Length: 242
Ligand code: SAM
Image 1 (cartoon, helix red, strand yellow):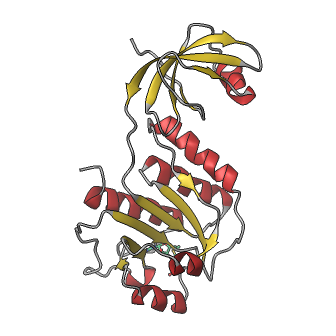
Image 2 (cartoon, rainbow, N blue to C red; image 1 turned 180 degrees about the vertical axis):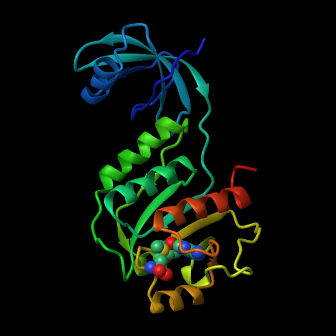
Image 3 (tube, rainbow, N blue to C red; image 1 turned 135 degrees about the vertical axis):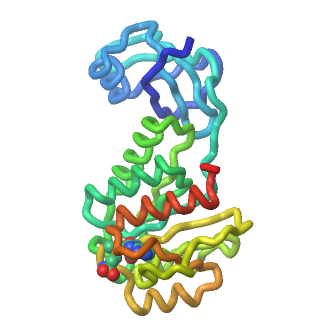
């Protein structure tokens, strides 16, 4: 019976009988915080091999070993959706990354726009947030969080087969600017910073052939709210919620 409640993302390959040595942090979490003992069950995933039920076979203060018993789920890839967003205050940026991971973004890309407050992010910290979100939400895939890049640079080598949904606050309330069904398979969403997009950015984005401009309703949303709203709109219209 799969009575495991804890899910852990590991880096090692998973397979029946595979032994997984734990890092110090993982051992501390399982044995120090969660008080697991030998024989306890844990669910493991690594973003490649799906999910496995594993058993604690060695447990010590700062180390331990889990042994894979059986595969419980196949790898479930999220839709091919990227989220581009301009970082805002730290806690709200963490929130955007966490929600994007929970809501099925395959890649999360901080971009620097004209009015973006910060030109630096802690990519390792944001990647850890995405990993924790995947552990919590039952995902078997961990979205990649990229380092911050200038929006212009990202647009300059944009893949021709990927549609970019530009959430344009200037379209506030515009009825016609809704997300249309489309047979495009590769998508991305772009959310601007607290200060919105500049006039030049808006003109440049509007002229790009791969851009679809949309409104997110009649009110100005905070960037983190807009990210969740756009992800919800996309998933319910074109994604894997149907
Ligand atoms: N400072 C801008 C203003 O007052 O017009 C608001 C920017 S808003 C806080 C941050 C981002 O969320 C925007 O750049 C846009 O990408 C998105 N957004 C917020 N409300 C929106 C709406 N009603 N329609 C489309 N996008 C919206």
